[in-house]
Length: 301
Image 1 (cartoon, helix red, strand yellow):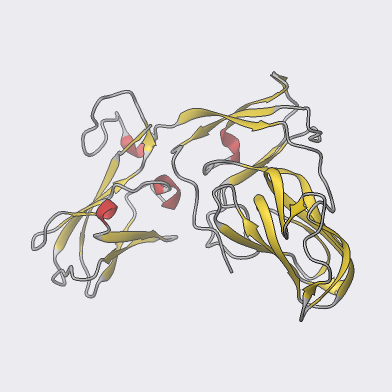
Image 2 (tube, rainbow, N blue to C red; image 1 turned 120 degrees about the vertical axis):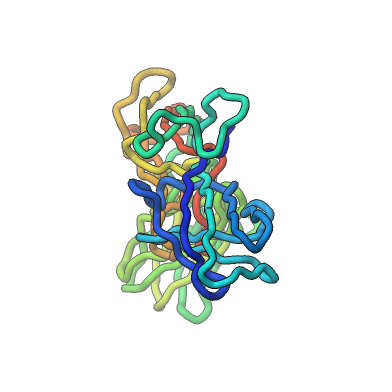
């Protein structure tokens, strides 16, 4: 369970419903990923809570933008206090004071080890979503989503994993589907004749192309999705394969850039060193700041 721990900022509110405040010393956007229990205190308005949708925070590269909800006003130039939730791991204390009781909060952040089981993913299937066919920019797939993993026009993967594709003729391919939580997500290739996706799809519901192509196949590879946001690839502590120490695979942190069709997975991914075959069980232990935060909203087109 994650408990709220706060950093405190005292600043002067600007004009309008939105205003910017600086980060606390030594902090940046990554320190607040997953935090939801933010509090805003002023002189002329009641104490506001982000959980109650009284205001929102947007964490930029160099400052935090505070946006008040409709109907809540503040005088320009008013001094405000902002408590920002770092959503760090439970320390075992029954209650946490504001700000968090740490010996030196500016240099410390509570985290927790989390064991992730990826199960026994089946082998990669290069045409499991779309068996070889032509596609046009105007009409899309000639015969639809028809691979071995497809039913009723939807390809469903055993576990969230990346897509791969190949075709003849230069084009940009765009894949639409859903993630592990059922959220719509979109990923596009570069201009060329192949695609190795970075996002973990659970289903593929549509494939489109920027130009007419032939011999198109779309399927799966061995890059597996994470269930929650991973802040750093260096946070992996242990990898197992069938319960034994595994040769390290490739762990990628969740992408914190504004999601687009070409950004990485919002939670992060894991590519085991061994190729999945439906029998090998993969597990890993990683350090997470929050086990509840599932990353930014997926790019849905």
